[in-house]
Image (tube, rainbow, N blue to C red):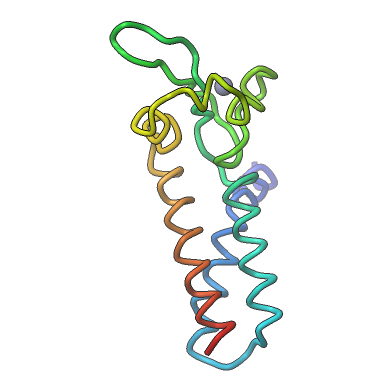
Length: 131
Ligand SMILES: [Zn+2]
């Protein structure tokens, strides 16, 4: 049980990167290269690793689009279903309206947290690079 909890915690390592970025702003601990590396890591984390819902299109109905609710990693990739994995690079996904796309992507607090963290981390990193 203990080891399982540890591995769960590791899925959130990107937020650790964010914390380091935020904390480092108060000091002059890092040079620009380190900020760039941390921002790069954080963006990779948000796009490919953050625990979120899949958000791929399950089916399109008259009442609206139905999105996949499987657990997934990263805002770009879908869940374990092969058709979902790369769907956000395909025509079906891009033919949706932006409203539907954001509805699919930002389902649940974790996806919003990932997006907000990515934005905050990028801004913080850029401040660190140019200050
Ligand atoms: Zn899926």
